[in-house]
Image (cartoon, rainbow over all chains, first blue to last red; front, side, top):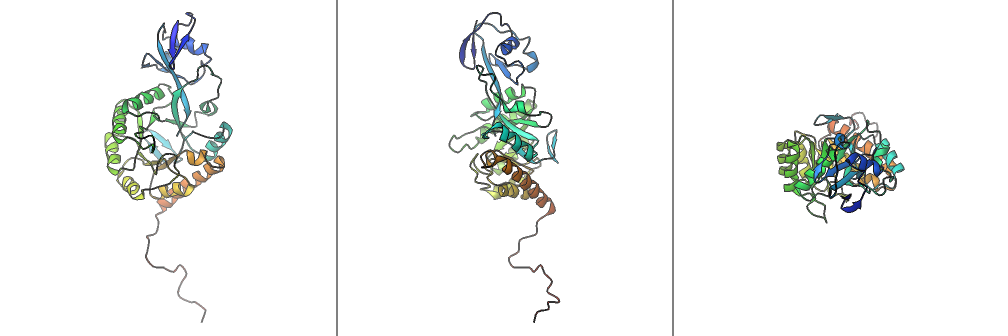
Length: 67
Length: 255
């Protein structure tokens, strides 16, 4: 499965079927991370059930220092 | 007590979280500042380096209200998207609307700021727009329903202090919502002057993070803001052209 994450093309196992499993794969399961899937912003409590598939575009963003 | 929308704060210092020398100094600075509101920016994660530390993780989030900004946005549309991303964290519904119209001066684009604020108010955000010191724009933002207005003292990160005290005074006098002086504060006296003028709060970042000793400067800013507020509430004496003796003129035993 090929995904575009933060503008980069990434090849991943087809066993990753949801946003939640994707976050776990990258070790982000317990981090404050906000996900946008194909230009739709996901509420945090929907990460686990939201399915992902080949060709999806994801943005994973978080809070960084700023004024 | 500073009230912004449904939020109430004892501290009138809102602190930015950018450009500190390291997290340890930053954490100490935040603690001594006694701030209750911390600003953040929204940026892409580096998914290939998930272990990189994040300042947010070091904070007790029960103690602080997050005020994400929309920095990086050049249009209302981009600002609205950034605000929605921030809210989807489930951690906050306050947003500092920041739409920069000029990369050299980092001055806000008033028209896009107005549009973004209007849209975000409809979406139910607690909206704090960062604006120039334009008096009428401040009025228009208040009329839209913004929960506070944040006029800049001078350009972001410039440390020039309050360069247009007259406009700032007009904004403060006309406002029925909190006025937070944001951007350009360089010294504790700048912050104190803003508070003496009747500002409801001060938002600053570089003045602390870029100081030689950020922790000490954080304390200085806290004290300056408290002193300025107390002075404002106490009511200053009118300025007079000539002297007025403080000591009694009766009973002088000389001559």
